[in-house]
Image 1 (cartoon, rainbow, N blue to C red):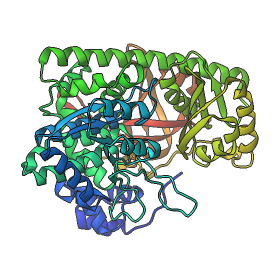
Image 2 (cartoon, one colour):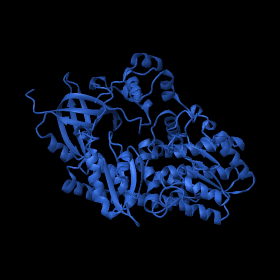
Image 3 (cartoon, rainbow, N blue to C red):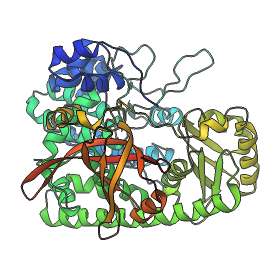
Image 4 (cartoon, rainbow, N blue to C red):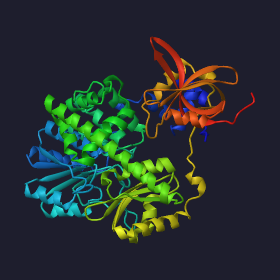
Length: 571
């Protein structure tokens, strides 16, 4: 599918000194109007939105200032994923900086489940905590907020998750002293799609202003808002894009010992950290602690000032992530085998892997969704019931579909593209049957065909070093600001050979109809590629252009993202 979004690309190009190709890509990312294009290309930390626009920010600050100055004991309650870890880190560092009597708690994924619970509240009360400050959770803690109040504690909620509604369509909010969430009804905050770490970062800015802390100290913490934004897969648009762009610059020269060690243990170049490295290397290491052991290890890594401890914890997180990757691969293999054997004709894949670690169910479901392009739910055996996670495709609202099967479930929650659930073991087959029956009213066979979006059909003749350098102004790439995809048809395959120690690179020379020759690379199973190619002499490709530097020489090449072989041509 080729994006067909309209705009005056020549005018945009002329106004900002970019090519019409780059202008078209920016428009394809739903950036509309000259002001928005300017911010996309040139936005800085000065363009971030005012924290006081967040609902209840004034209330939260008044409470926190009073508690800090009164020496009251404050406990931050975070979450066990990268967003929760970074949110907790930001608030803890800031509150300590302004002299608060503060500590933190992060729930255990298996024992406590998501978010603040009654046992965390009761433990805080027993230990003399005066104020509970949540981050990246708390918006659904209706009962817990009441319990905290009954036990004589003050509760301040900072969160970014969607808010439930009552029958009248009003927000269902916990009765906390302040509820800071950009998604509240009537919120004047201009961009609600920020993560918990960004909400915490805004609280820190406002708090630092009150206590007269220099703004540079707030800017020094931006890398953690960037880590949280990418790690929580937020759209890299609007102020999220600014924070990640600016934060990535700072990560390369971070003063944080633990983060430096994590970069080192993963053999990354600090000067070249991208959003990809956060999403697929650093983030998974921080998440692995919360998945397999306790997220407090990841937080301890970020907080430590001791070189030896930082080294030990960074190595531990890297090892945990390696373990998590091996366990995930095993889970995906087992789940795929079950699909091939029993569920190939199902429209919704419901796979039971009793021995899969419950924290990996969502990752395995995501891989099944990618492989089969069908909604997928992976169930595992929990301590008290069967637990599961689902990942969906466009056109299938997973939360609504589970609502229709709600009588079979003990508990469930989520949104259109992902959900979590629990049920009794004997109801697994009923759930599979119900979801598949209902799916036939929602989906068609066409929904199972993956759609690949192409930004522009750019012939190789237009690829140049200046264009490739210009495309770097679109970075950082990620969710909502994907790497551009170009396409060209009917390329003659002049040469193709498999390379790499694991035979996972195919090196090609492709020739256009006008006779231009271009080097190309495909990263994947090389032998499978050659088998698929057979005797085909022509191919269509989706690609991204790059500059290849080797032995001091620079040349143009394209990285193939997708391909399709044409039948044997007589040409």
